[in-house]
Amino acid sequence: MSKQKKYYVVWKGKKTGVFTSWDVCKKQITGFEGAQYKSFADKAEAEKAFTKSYNDYKGKNTKKTILSATEKAQYGSPILKSLAVDAACSGNPGKLEYRGVLTDSKKQVFIQGPFEKGTNNIGEFLALVHGLALLKSKNLPDFPIYSDSKIAMSWVKKKQCRTNLEFSSKNKVLLDLIKRAEKWLQENTYKNPILKWETKAWGEIPADFGRK
Image: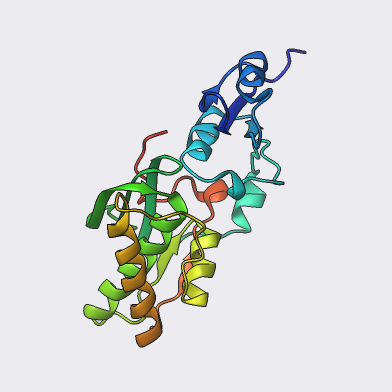
């Protein structure tokens, strides 16, 4: 039986990126203090992981999970009359974008960015708050909003973007957006259900940027 191919993501090392060889990956992390890396069984998942934070995957099982039809059925189906949001970040930190689309038609209803020196988690948080504010302005209190980021969902619930990102003149605009989003959460209420998009059962979220 042939050995399953693995893909190696290096977030911090002599060189960063997605590598297809352990020997090449090892060269990037050997002797590099605080190296951050992890193996994946799927190339698309490895490429997606590189756009996110190492902390999103630290301690998690990254073996590819293939669900049976019975297992998929346990998740049911997504609510099509809803809003889906997602973010894309080239590097960590890197150029950040986020957007929202209608789940059923994938029609884009808003997009922001690119912003310099951002992270995927920040983008997911801002996308959720942007979506909530938009739905409130449209008087759609029962319209659900989907996100595939548990971290962003928890930040919205706590009304605070708990990022460890260092801010400077290069990404001050992001800090301003975060403060604006936090202020909106503190001053507004909403009834819109914030739902987890079950990627392993339903595939990529409709708002995904498709850059894998």
